[in-house]
Length: 465
Image (cartoon, rainbow, N blue to C red; front, side, top):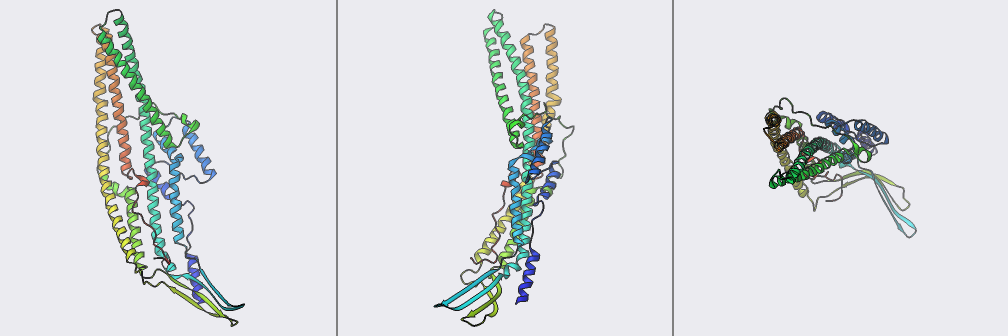
């Protein structure tokens, strides 16, 4: 008996799992670097916090491009830092699954008067829990992989949100500048109309129309300023900036439209290979399948205890032996646990099918939006804006030849600015669609919120039903 206990103790010590140096974050870092080109960091020490702060200052010293905004979000976003804790929680479960049950001490002592009547002592451990350790470790390893995929998807989602916020902020600021030009042109027309009407050289109705246009332009400018401020604040939140860092600078305009659009072939196949939510759903299904196997393995007997014992009665010497404890399935035959595990597995399998169908559809939808916005932006750039420019040149030529008036010149100038502003909106929508297309190849927007079925490790070696 002593030899058996020593052998099992050696097995437990050999199988004890330990924490990794990076807490599983290295896998997340590599995935994020591959998908976004930027580096994610998990800040857990003062030195890491100082390094992140130095890198942030370096980026904030220059006007931020889209990649800089994404990098700042991955460095400073407090929500991401909280998400990384999911890795620590899951790894703790994995390490716990690799550590065997503790020994149990049973001690009994009875007395008759002042004399000891009987003494019983035993040390025992959960034999079934030890035998099932490899299966339990395998289950928790699959769950840890799923959490890594979930965390990676959340980081990539925040990166995409930061890139879209940068696009929105730059476009809103540029729109504000154009709306200011419209307002200045409308103000000049309104003032000229007021003066001409005051001396009787302009109809009162036309003067009121110019004044109304100016009033509307002023209102539109106020809305544009508010939108620019709101988009800038949203970007600041995603980048985790506050205080003096809010003075960050942005470029004056968005990148130009690419020469050619992306090709849409094989996008669905790429999504099936790359989507992190599909990968997480697969890991979840595998985990639940292992859980079902464990539930069946412990259906009738959920605990077996084995240990060394000694007893003593009165003044007699100790008698040595061993103790075995087995759960007797009288009231609970494990049918409820099996039914629950089977239903959970079917749920996980259907969620995997749903994730695959949604992934294909979302990629198709994202590419449709991408191509539509590319064609619209190219139409404005190549057709509408050049046509407005030629019309403006013709109106200016006629004005110089005294064939048209100043109000027609001002009205044409405003229309040309509006055409440019419409192109900016189409260009903004294209770049947002580009970000969403790339995001659709990595995972859905839900991120960590898109959870699979609620699962838990079945009790091993427990006494309950």
